[in-house]
Image 1 (cartoon, rainbow, N blue to C red):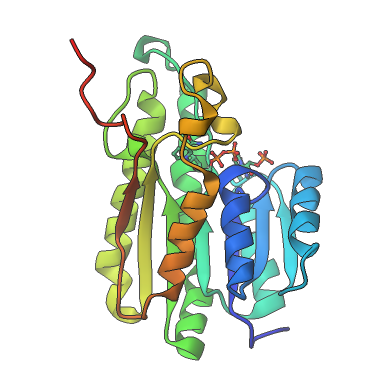
Image 2 (cartoon, rainbow, N blue to C red):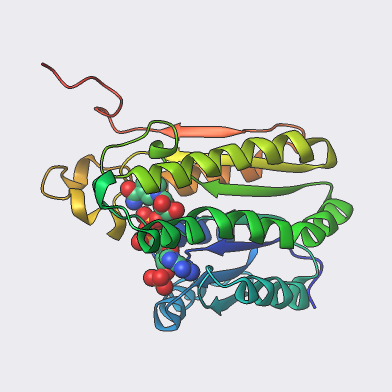
Length: 247
Ligand SMILES: NC(=O)c1ccc[n+]([C@@H]2O[C@H](COP(=O)([O-])OP(=O)(O)OC[C@H]3O[C@@H](n4cnc5c(N)ncnc54)[C@H](OP(=O)(O)O)[C@@H]3O)[C@@H](O)[C@H]2O)c1
């Protein structure tokens, strides 16, 4: 077990924002457990990261909707590192539907990954986060919420509700844990150039989308701040987001 390195768990690390965050964290010296569903995509992500010499990279493949998988992630990370310096709850799923067409399955799938897994994985990681505070005076939880978690969006009602939940959960973490050395941050980006943004590509050119590396730089920044400096929330917008559409 390597208890000397700082370490992190990044969910949704096989693609998009999570992969960019994992790359930045590894550059900052964090050994990592990468989490996603598809093992082949995860293997490719790990190979991409480890092409550059640096700290260890482990993978855990499974669905975050399954509570037993959340326990496996924590057990695996504990066996490898004994502590957890940063948990990045980033995995998410989005679905576009009119409110009148929302079904229980559609809603449950988004709540399970976007909100339930964020809360439960954080809860299960608490002993490891506390071990990091004991060893290095600091630990972090970073949750990828969304701009849709600050302003509800048409056809994204289930997703928006789940992301408002992530923002609320992050605020509660701050209120409960900040004095114990565990800092919580919610990141709320507008449209980011990842596979999740595919439904927008006809209307929004990729060149005008936020880059995954922009989110990674925000996470990197939070890891470099002094342990008494807390960034509870970061909203990242494209130039036109939140502006009124001209009548
Ligand atoms: N792209 C945007 O415009 C945007 C804007 C604001 C916020 N966000 C948020 O940013 C986060 C990352 O999204 P992204 O844009 O990087 O999307 P992405 O490229 O589609 O990546 C999603 C990641 O989540 C993983 N994932 C999905 N369902 C999972 C499950 N049940 N269990 C385990 N892993 C699962 C995927 O792995 P598999 O492929 O193996 O399932 C993948 O690694 C999400 O929370 C999203 O809501 C995105």
